[in-house]
Length: 118
Image (cartoon, rainbow, N blue to C red):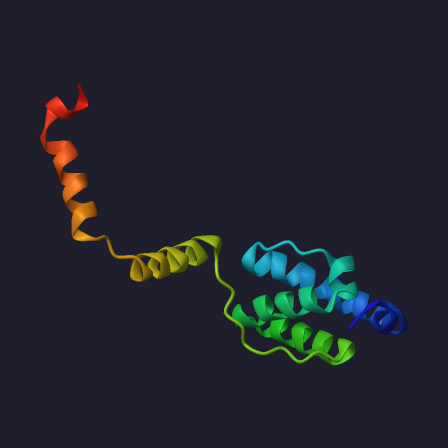
């Protein structure tokens, strides 16, 4: 969805987004961009998902009305933090690489013999 769709909706989407912003800030401390929320479908889906996860009655009501106004269908998405993404990629790398016996031996030998440093 792009800007042409949102231009028709005008004040109603913006006013509901403002209500959502205010309540979300009070309940969870999250601050969102209301103008961008009323213009960008992906951001709107993300903010609606955040609002639904709070389990606050007013936020759920505002999120549902914003979904209805913007014509969005949000599926329950699990957003991962950068730390989770790094941990998952590290696990994949560790699983895909196994050191050979020779590499293990070379790593151990250099630590055992101080004379090899000279």
